[in-house]
Length: 476
Image (cartoon, rainbow, N blue to C red; front, side):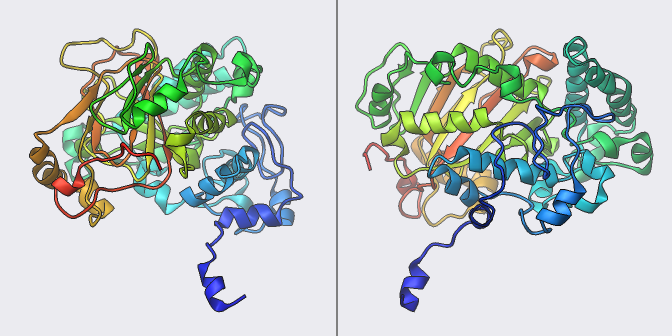
């Protein structure tokens, strides 16, 4: 093989190398898994944190060195496993990285395997030494919810939240100044010595409770013929709509923008219920935003806890069901967001680094107040970033985007109202933002969306606003 041949070969993602050299290790199919290979669905009990397994320092020292798993998986790692639909391999990698991280409360006790959080997680709002008032209020509401709903089925877990977690959150919340006094940090609050003495370091941004889809619904693999998707959907028609030559159907709406469509009732009833429970119960909501800059919503990510096999299977089934749309586009990333019902605005104007965006609302029925002027959904504009713009240019300089790309199009857009189990599938490079919303108060009533990103971003041609217009009505 010549040097040229070597240079042309793509670099294998780090986790792919790990998978190849560790092919004799057991790959768990579900559950929160520690580095010793134990599955918390089978061994759920622990005195201090009843929902989590103990992490074995012996297994770590004998079978793994510090660099065996990276501190975080990247999009290339996710795409590598997904390209062959190796969902067991992807879950194995994600769950082991997660179990080794500071998110696992057992690692506070077992210092021999404790790692520091990845700087990437910290920089995007997932650090464990700061918070915001709205984020801590979310965590408190979730703790109260878990103490209530688990009281009969898992009394030791419910008691842990009631007697330990809730008092800590309540005490620390008393110490957070008003938002207007945190202008220097844009609303972020750094934990103090008093907060740590209250125990915040033991509970904040930890996987205090993880429940798997297998526990919630043991038959989800076989229900509805094994499909998480509504089996009444016409995916051939959906794909025709994407390319601009389809017609409206009872479940799919064509739009004026090629590469953007609306699908109602995307999930089967049982899949929707299971996903809702996963997102309401699991304490994997680690990201907070700076509220004075970005608003009030918490985030959960595939590389930081949102990796239940059901979510990975959903990505696979979406990918298989729309082969013309998804051609050449592997799963790249996934997240879920919960929005503060005390706020009215969500994610501001931006474009995502992917080819296809599947945005699904899984909020409870009746939670949206449906106030006129507050659609609660998504606004998708017809403009894309020009090819010569970088991420910083099109996702931070909002006024420049408005003046140079949106205004020349007279702000042409598709505005989709929120509706539970409604998906908006669109070219992820199109600028978009959350529409204003009004939802009922209460933990279970929050606006929740699940987003899956596939493939690499296809930006507009040229370097001006007109050249940045969308044009995706052509099959690959």
